[in-house]
Structure formats: C-alpha cells, structure tokens
Image (cartoon, rainbow, N blue to C red; front, side, top):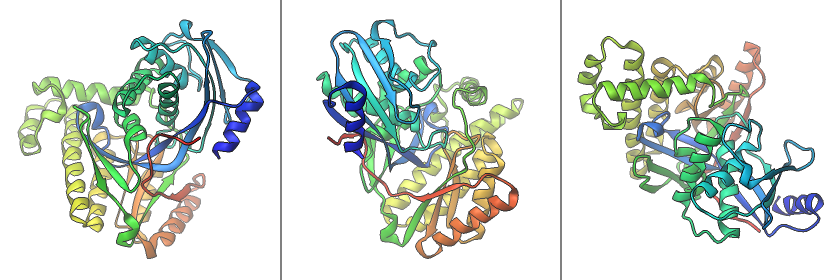
Length: 383
C-alpha cells in the first residue's frame, strides 16, 4: 500500500515523497473514560493504519491531500495556522504542525498525502492515527529527535486546542508506542507504560471488532459534559483527579456525593474501571486470557449504566455476542456509537460474528462491519 501512496503523492505534487510513514488505529481492550482522569488504560494497535507520504518545504507552505476526501490539495500557510478556524479533516494534520511550531520546533512547510484504512467515527482512533503519522513524518524529516511519548503529547495538544475535542492521551500514545503482539498498559498520569504480551490465537481465542457504523463525534457536548462531571467529582472529593480515589475507598466517596447523582455515577465508573484495567493486566500476565472476558463485560455494563455512553446498537452487539458463546464483550472508544470489542473462543468466533449480523438485520439496523483484530505495530516509517 505504501507504494500506491507514494505514487499518488507523485501525481499530486510532481515528484516522489521523501518518505512514507504509518500509524495505526487502536482498540482499547479495557479502560474507557479513564485517560482524562489520570487513570489506567490498556489499548492495542490495529493492523489498519493511516499512511502519510511527505516531503518537507522551506517556503512556509503546507499542502494537504487526503485519499478519502479527494479533490485538490488544500493549501495553507504554516504561519497563519490558528485554533478554531478549521473544522474539516485538515484540522488534524494542520493542528499537528501548529502544535509543533507552538512548542518551538521549526517546521517550514510540507507536502502531505494521507490515506487511511482506519474506519472514521468507529471509536478506533482514526483521528489520532492521522495526527501521529503526520507528527512522526515531520519529526523525521526535520530532525526533531522527539520520542513517541512527546509526539503523543503534542498530538493531544493539537486535538484539544486546535481541533477542539477534549480527548485524553490514550489514543495518541497507543498509535505512537504500541508494539506487535502486546497490549499497552499505560498510566496516563505520568505516561509510564509497559508492554504486556497478548496473543489471543495462542490461547485458542480471537478478538473481534464490531463497527456498528453509528458515527460519533468526540467534540460534541455529551463527551465534554461527562468530562466536566468527572472534574467536578474530583473537586468535591478533594482529589486532583479521580485516579486518586482508591477502589477500597469508593463506598465512602460515593456517600459523600449522595446529593450529586449524576456525578456519583461518573465517579463510580471511573474508579471501578481503573481497577478493571489492573485486573485485566494481571490476568494477561498470568496467561489466563479467558478470564479477561467477564472483565470486559463488566466494563460495558458500567459504561452503559453509570457513564451513559452506550447506544442500542452497541448493547445489541454485547448481548448477542455473549448469547452466541463469546467470553466477553464491551463497547470501545468514547461511545455514543462506534465499535465494540469481543473476546471469543476461536471455534465460536464465526458464529458470534454471524449472530451479530443477523441481530442487526432483525432490528432494522445498518449492517455492521465485523473483523478480527491482532495486536500490531505502532507508528513507524515504512518507505
């Protein structure tokens, strides 16, 4: 695929690119809405990636083209980039250029052609893939010497301030730092991380991703409202972030929030979800992959009932998959649509996928996209 991206770059800009880079989408195995609460998450990278063919410029011009958007390249001036002025797809790569320059790095322009196989709006971090692949390419081309962790922070800055989406650090760190055959246990407070071996096939299991094809928008008000509710909960409890509310102290904390029912539910989800991430990591490290299934299902119930970010399509995936023999299932990503992740025995996986498709047809929902997911490599240069 990289050869095709490079050839398209040549057609657009009249010469071949200086290189081609890739950054993956991600599935978050467990740990949802914990990242902006300084908590724990455990994503792994998908094989589906965003590719960027890029060459540097020294005249202050930024030309951006997307295979998915089509049309002619969008021409911008790097010195004129400013938050809030761009609500199109170009905000993601342009925001990265803005964030790099704001941090003091000398980016003098670039020609960029992007092509992504990560489904947009599916809760699989298509936006983070675009950001990270752009950042990595510019890092290499301009000799910035930035680590994956620093690039992830800059990409989050781009999405928070330039795009206007109040996301946490998980998606960008997963795209930048995941390794093939592993899940990434990430402490989003200090960005310490460890790679946890995760080989479902070796355990006779398969991970399925079900894209409900119900689009979501992270910059919409519901996501921001929940984040604000979490911040209010931490303030009422005298904590810097909900990460600081220990699982063993949860009952006492909830009693203190008795007059704040909505905040109470948000707090309960975040605190219990942090513990679920720790439990899942312990199970994977001990080799008990099958026992991770019920942890995923508990997480979905919490996201549905306490955090209120599921939808009928996601609930139908989970209920149908479990009835068809899956070990566990839950929504993944920010919610309000997007995708679910399912852990199933290898010999039951096709039946689970078929049952989900039939259930969607019976409910009159749009046909879902179902595919297997193998823990894959993070961002890298490919040509």
